[in-house]
Image (cartoon, rainbow, N blue to C red; front, side, top):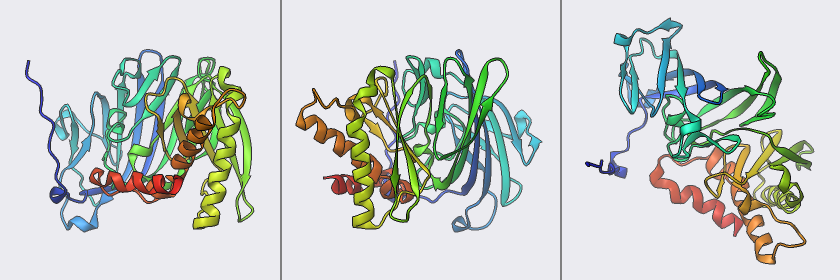
Length: 334
């Protein structure tokens, strides 16, 4: 059996993207045997790459393409090129809107990259190149966009629907389903996208910034872990205060959320405004946890929250700068 050799990428070969994405509008419909992702991308030619309109090559893997529209015009199969790793379209203007709809299968996603279902919960892990398994996109850290995300799912199974940013709307839908819309006003690369849908319980508090504005703090967990959140909440407030006092960095959204669940496939991920942790990294019961366990929780919470400015608002240009993205928050949390 032939196995593909990994592609070697050198820093000297870096090229800025041909196109940029100013706005990303996602609607994600979750079902038990498939999910639908509708994406609207407001795009423009990157002025750094000169004149002309070269083909737009979007990353995509394990996606079933249902439709493509360019500036509200449906594209026929001959108007675009599709292979296992990309969708190529041909823009007619420097500014344009691209709409795609795809079908994916999170319930069969054993790679645990992109959107996957683990146990009774939907979750995402997009660093480094997982977003291309959710929809067609310029899946690279130097392409930053504002995101508006609507999640739709069965209300009984998935009463909690989360994504990045501030909540701007929610309500019932047909057939016992419901929806929630989240708006992240700050540009971010696709690897920081997050989505969680499940039956989760919430511990809530507030943090008052130096400017006097309040931030809602929420930690979402499975019911059996509700009594293990106090230290993580205290650690989050201490981290936010320290960032303000030492660096003058106020948290920039109205809400900061942590999801700490048993089935998350990594230790922790700094998704903008919606950090996702494996419960072993962030939960501790005061009566039974050791001092070392409490210190670990404090360090992990601090590291991921410090990413809000060191890595999220100020991201790396390419993945060869990974040590810079991770090194600065690690130094600040030490």
